[in-house]
Length: 479
Length: 95
Image (cartoon, rainbow over the protein chains, first blue to last red):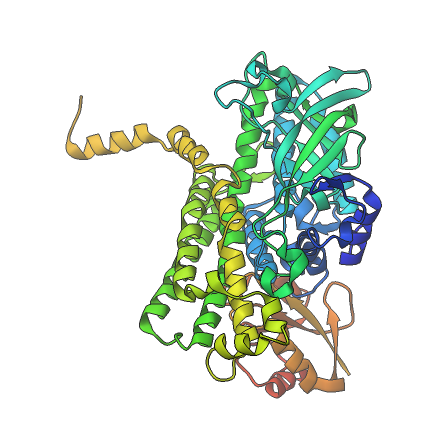
């Protein structure tokens, strides 16, 4: 069982999964600077669970075994559990200032738990029992699971079975007596290179004719035929070059995403939780999306707290902290962050019990939260750039600061108020740069579904008919 | 030496550094108090519940029901030495 950070890193060293970085197979995954920040972020979830001052949020009691487990493997048993999830995400973000990746698998486990229960109720199958066995294994070993939903999708105007290349949506290519064979890929997989398992789920609602794509199954990332290709991030090379220039050297930027390829991967039946039930693909996707959108005011709220703090420090270093317009902008940033957090807490507080017994957030409010994230985080970043100044775009290299020849000039001209060194000032400005650019922003836009997916949810669940009735009644219209 | 149980809330958005404040109290207490994790120990009659804000997500009512004396910390309100005196005293107190 994985308990400590060291256990976790050792488990990755022993996993032997095939990860590619810049075209080459990675041999020493836990020592490659490109992956270290992401490993450290995920390791925080193990470390903090063992700290008395955090364990109340980082751990839970398994409803299956009665044992104390990582909350990231827990099935929500109450509204309080839903709220604690959001509180936990904000908390960890304060420690990492970045994505810690485990929420995706957490949401996949919860969505699959409630959906397999419903599949069995309708079809008389025994998928829920199989899934519960798998869940006990994950809880007992405290494994990190990737929630594998997003398919590459190819031509977006066509359904999975209409694609020129049928593999651009992950599918079952063979059914055997002992299991299935999986082919395809999952894109943008957060934390995949430093996870143990991937929980494959359909990427969209499916119709008759798309049965091969209605597949949910759990695959160890070291299974034969699985390979991972790491995605290049903004300022990727800084992870190798310089701790100061990296901005957040220990925890990096967002989650470290990868393309996970399934090149005819065998999956035994005990790890298959949906196979051909097209009538449940849509509901599983919606549940996963809701559970994942619920998170964003927690983690992004916490990351924004750190960013507000960084901007406060940058202002202090530059002697502008007492300026009224700076105070106003910092307050505006806090307002935007708390608005996100309020959404996550609200959708949790309005959560409900599903037939499976697992609790589920309010989908409209979770949706609202994520849509606000796609807007507010950009606005928060804009204010951060405003407060920090153009200096974040023109700072010299760390190597300039360290140079025996020109370092004295960097120290002389990059210095702020008395008592604050150039290096201290540069470190905070680099942190702001790290948290507000490129990959960090795009993740806020498209993680947990693009804004258009959220607009579609309003069209479906926004109760426009009721709103029209209320308006008619007040206007005195009876026809 | 008095045995005191220690229980923190999760600390999602605290308004003070909970761990730092508790360390100050522990330092002030020195050898007069043995601090134990509430879930891993028995044989104590006082529990300190440390929460980061007034929301106080951990209430500690179960410890009161078990007949234990509960001292709650929700902010940095007392000097460490004063807290130590409180913990060594009798009777339920709220900070």
